[in-house]
Length: 359
Ligand code: NAD
Ligand code: ZN
Image (cartoon, rainbow, N blue to C red; front, top):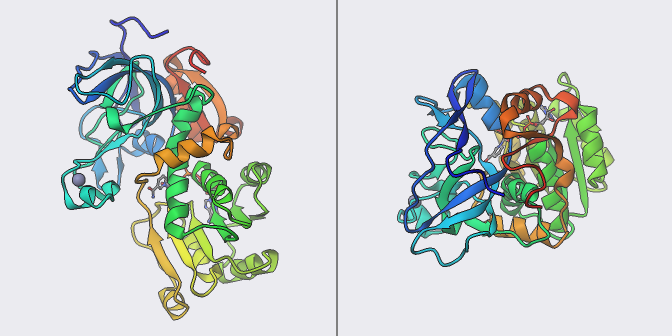
């Protein structure tokens, strides 16, 4: 059941360590938009980063911004020109809407659009709110058996799908994944579903590796910060039956990107997903002399429908990633749980509707 039409409780980030719940007007929709009664919103590391630092790189919070971008909701109202959805449809929200007109958009690489409007990336509002409007063609209707939480999890899963596609993961791939946080874990799930036959995943925290193992990682490797990338690379080669042909960094540490290069088989691919320091030291000559390609990824692009198909078909089970649930009125507690990693937190889910209303 949607909230009353005069209640639009919204989580607004006003500045560093200043996240407030307040009433906002219910948005007016344009002809190509839908009004959504929001349901589930996952907390992402970037949300926590904006709360703690007020910025990520050149995206700087200069005015109050609604937080949240991993989300699903129910269509409450249709713009005049919307034909792909109807009122009552449960949808996952792809949170970035590009301009559709620039060369990147026309070439289909819309994630590179300079005019992207992306939820909870300053200056644009996110969707941890009771009522939110969005472009109808960036909403993905969920089949009845896919829950709203799973719909929200399509956001990180799309990052994993995009990373694996950029890396060329396919049948028989041997994949090294560095970092077993939410992004490393969805990358693991995507790589499995795309046919990888052997996956080694690393982390500094054993409990995260335990989850990775539970999700089906072939091998896990616990690292400590003082190890050299060259030494760890040898260890990776000892553990795996063959050197990995694709390595995907999902933590952003310099040592991890270095390890990814050293460990990857000649002619292979390194994908950098993790965003750490803007400049780091890499063994570039090692990479070039062995024709190891280094590719970055930025979010996702045409990956939502594949992510949804993986979940809807049962090939991928993202549910294990959700460790805690909070109501929107407990947003503070939810962020605290996520940022401190309380209770083994991986993905913390905020419910705008009473939990399971739309399961
Ligand atoms: P997270 O911080 O929750 O998880 C990172 C994990 O890596 C943790 O479990 C941590 O213990 C582990 N780790 C840290 N240093 C390590 C090391 N040297 N070796 C191995 N493991 C190490 O973050 P997340 O939400 O999983 O996101 C991962 C990274 O991906 C972040 O840097 C995030 O900014 C980035 N990201 C990038 C994109 C993109 O579009 N490129 C999209 C989403 C997230
Ligand atoms: Zn564009």
